[in-house]
Amino acid sequence: MEAVDKLVEWAETEGVKLNGIKPSLIPGRGIGIVAERDIKENEVVITVPHKLLRTYDSTPKHIVTALKGCTVHGILAASVCLETDPSFAIWKATWPTIEDFDIDIPMRWPLELRDLVPHYAKALLAKQQGKFERDWRLCRDAFPHDFTKDQYMYAWLIVNTRSFYHTTPKTERFHKHDHMALQPVSDLFNHASVGCHVKYDADGFTILANKDHKAGQELYIRYGHHSNDFLLIEYGFVVPCHENPFDDTCIDVYMCPRFTVAQSEIMAANKYWGNFMVDNNGPCYRSQVAARVLGLPEEDWPGVFAGTRDDGPDAEETKRQLAFVLRLYEKDIRRIMNEIARSYDGEDESRELLRRRWLEVKEMIQTTISRLEDDDD
Image 1 (cartoon, rainbow, N blue to C red):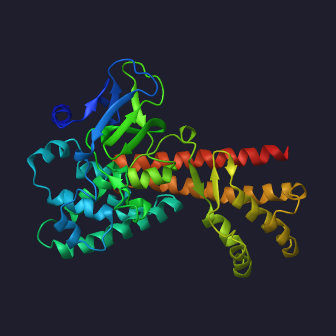
Image 2 (tube, rainbow, N blue to C red; image 1 turned 90 degrees about the vertical axis):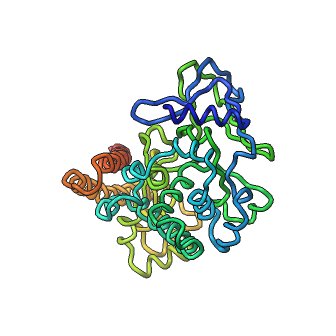
Image 3 (cartoon, rainbow, N blue to C red; image 1 turned 180 degrees about the vertical axis):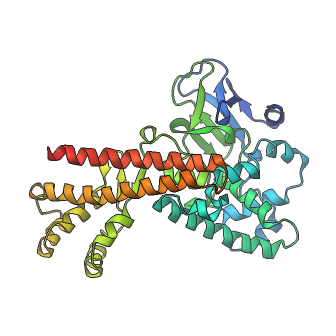
């Protein structure tokens, strides 16, 4: 905790104001923010002045100019690599290490282990990898002798896992994924599905308590409305699915092969192809439409797409079709979890993290199957 104490001391001399909170070690979860005293709802617990934010606007002009066409994410990562101010080392000392990322972040896992992440997570991972490679190529060409690819990936992942949503008149034109800023101390808050209120303006960032907290309780912020697949790929952790109201899992690889090419084209033409999900409440509407279509002759499909066909007469067949698809998924989950259990790829902690994700998916799918089958009784 010495590094954290030094960060707080430096930050407070630079204008950061902590009100009734302090960074503390959280058993099993590293560093988090804990109440030093009883805190009331809507009480401001921290403010970070604008001068301490690392943003597109605060990045040295020569870096921005050299990286024309690069994402803000990539530019901030390059600025982290190129930073030489001694005070920055105080902040950097509280960040996770590259070895931490090797354990937690799937992009750092061996290929064999990455191949075992859920289908939707795999798509997110491919997109993330592509984004990083594009940023790296631009940074490598602009700064060929200043940092290695591994050093750049570390900085890129720091930005990815520790930045806050932030816009300015200059950055409003960028994609929403590039509305980001790094800020000290506030980046030590852990995630929860319900967390403190984060606000920013021209003066900086303010975080307010979302409820009353007793002394010793941890305070959280919410990183966004994200499924555990997203949290795993982007941030390197998962939460129990019953604690995450935004969790879901994709069943495309089991649902889509049941349609012919011609049928899939009709589904696509009606904007119902793919993105079939199951969450803690059961199959999404798109999944239910797909299941109804599978159980009906083609002449009845227009009524389903238009929402004019009564779903009552289709209910039993719809549940049967869904249960069939989910049983395929359930069987695959057992196979994948056996592969994880037999694997020696990556670190033990990485495999355990992946196993926990699959346990959550398994619970979601088995609960949905039970509901479908109970409805048949």
